[in-house]
Image 1 (tube, rainbow, N blue to C red):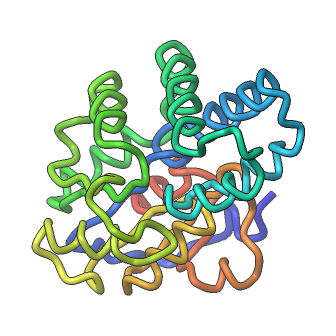
Image 2 (cartoon, rainbow, N blue to C red; image 1 turned 30 degrees about the horizontal axis):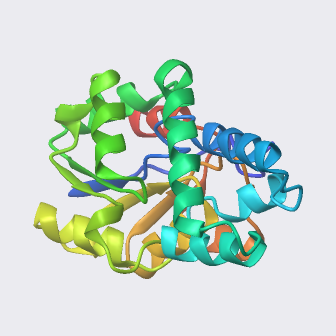
Amino acid sequence: MLENAGAKRPRLTLPEAVIFDMDGLIFDSETLYGEALLELARVKGLPNIDLAVARSMVGRSWTGSRLVLQALLPAHEDVDEFRSEWLTAYDELAETRLVMKPGVLELLTLFEQSGVSCGMATGSRRSVVSAHLAAHGLTDFFPVIIAAEDCREGKPAPEPFLKAAEALGKHPGNCWALEDSVNGVISASAAGMTTFMVPDLIEPDEETAARCTAVLSSLVELHAWLSR
């Protein structure tokens, strides 16, 4: 149980905009990415690519993840080809097993009804973002999407969140960021946004938690907090 989950919350003043991460926050996709990676590693006989490796790449841009994999792959394995196989395996899993996290639709609806703009800053490919949002009826909630192809420096650098705020026409200091990963929290807080964390696979350490306005058990908790 998170230390501050369910604690009494002060009243929040809604921001001008909210920037969402996608993987691990809106969709339970990080688990599928990890499963796809471990199965590919098993097929290729690469026991050094394990769960710890998969989790070390959560919320990280491909530039950072590429360095992790490059250090582990044998000389005959091209890292970009390996990534392509990994993403194909993920896509196959996501077609039938991707689910939306609790509280997402309710929170997006609350923001829409309150006149709060919403955007997205994600390390996923734009094609994947579009497919996932369309499949779950969320496309219209996100007029602005900053995807992997849109940034030279992905998370934990602040560029994705800064670009999302700029595209929405908002100052970063007037935006909230919702994240599930340590790298995402670092990115959002460095961009100057009020940051909320809903941990997915990895709990925050003290330094990460200190960057956040709150560490929440779920988006349901944030919705309840705002509704009060």
